[in-house]
Length: 369
Ligand code: F6R
Image (cartoon, helix red, strand yellow):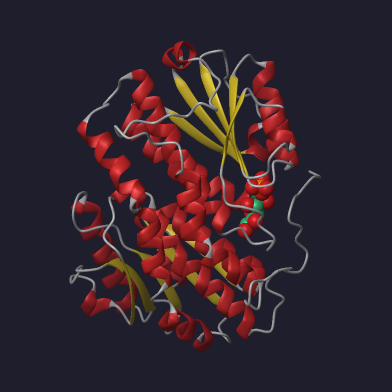
């Protein structure tokens, strides 16, 4: 069943272009607008929404963090994102004008389920983004947008994550479409970009051999740090999470702007630091700031592993290792920037002799608190 791959995780990483295309399938019509028939929350209700709250755990939470940038940018609705396990134990402000989005691959995560039950008790509408048909979370939600990633067997989430991102972008654009906010050329352009994203993911997958080699060379390291800004920050967190769960290494993700507020003290000679670089086009301020972050950490001896867009020459002098990703719009960059981090973690786990599909102490769905 592993289709010729040594591990399910490798198979699932390779399946990502198809998974992404499947999640988009049938949801964009010929005129370039969205037809999310499954979202059974009436447009009238969606027009009244004044806040979005996203709840999720682990990798799904990282998808939610990225969704926040997209939702706020495209709809101008305030969006909060919170770990389900934290959300349910405080006293969150929820009402009928709040749209709650619960993201879960398995649809069975207890904390996420409890969070959505709490939200519904407060009168909020809940939309599930889920990969498992008929699981508990979608059954208990007002509506569900399925990610059509196919079964994900490896404990570490890969293709589910990329399809969760696609679903989040679709929801954000759909909210924009229904509410009429900022609906126009920009959003139509994003829909076109989304349609070509599967090809971009495929392209990244074709260039991963140097990343594997690099991972093997780092097998005896104790720590790897990950830095990012904007949507690259959740990507950094996801890269660190993958490395913890698979390679059992100490890994941490930071917002690059926080370096000076503490984490830079961790930088020492030869410490591998992965940096996710935003596109130099678009929000070029962010790009320039991260280039100076790379300079700063390299001056302190870090071994810099830089993930940057093709054609970004500014990073070249400061990159000990350079991983190129295709040019994508800023908000969609996590779709391509995450892939090298998945491959990196998987290869490091193998090099360290770990069980890739069944990491120690972890379960595929966490049905206890
Ligand atoms: C990480 C991972 C976990 C899950 C988390 C949520 O690779 O697999 O962090 O993402 O347990 O699971 P779901 O999405 O099933 O709610």
